[in-house]
Image 1 (cartoon, rainbow, N blue to C red):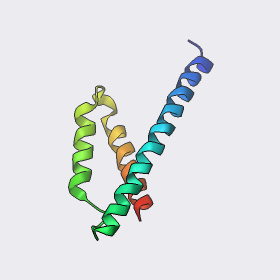
Image 2 (cartoon, rainbow, N blue to C red):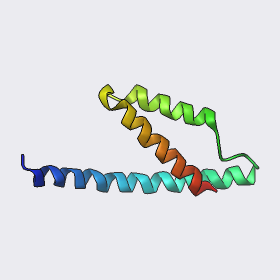
Image 3 (tube, rainbow, N blue to C red):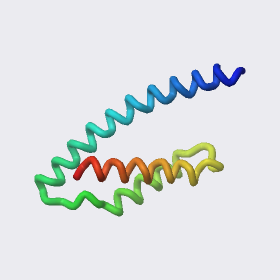
Image 4 (cartoon, helix red, strand yellow):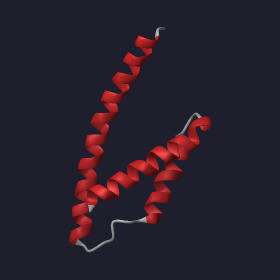
Length: 84
């Protein structure tokens, strides 16, 4: 396979990821509204630990575990910022 073919595959995956990200952020917005209405803090360390644990348990390639954790920590940080 050529570099261009591989990059095309990455582009297709990125397009799917963007759709999933938008869906996730819509739900994040709804959660933020519920938290605000119920006067609940945006930060939930227990939930964050659960998310990371699920990521690690679902990961098939353990060699990329630190990168997956970094990705989801970033995603949760962005989500918290969006909820504020």
